[in-house]
Length: 112
Image (cartoon, rainbow, N blue to C red):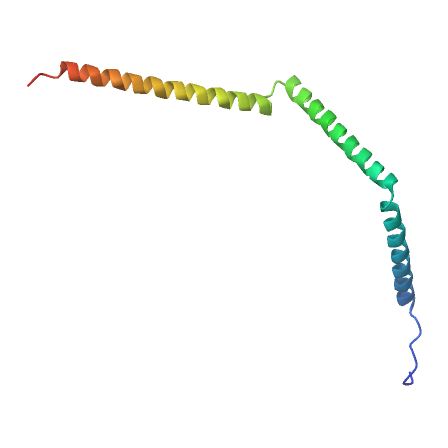
């Protein structure tokens, strides 16, 4: 090639320029769409539908777990709370028994 001449446009360079133009036009069009109130309404409706669908799926999964008679998360939480209460009661009972044992030991100890 002689100096000062520009190389011919390759098909790849042409495709890249076309892609950049398309991307710029698409970005401008999407910016225009996102700026409208209709898009905000659509986004809010979609979010509401997703939350409702999530609630339905969670309820279905919960029913399925109940039907298999497996312990659900709430059951495990309730059992953990009940176990903690029982452990606290046993600890208080142990302290009371130790106190009574101390009293009996002092009563049986010979007076000096």
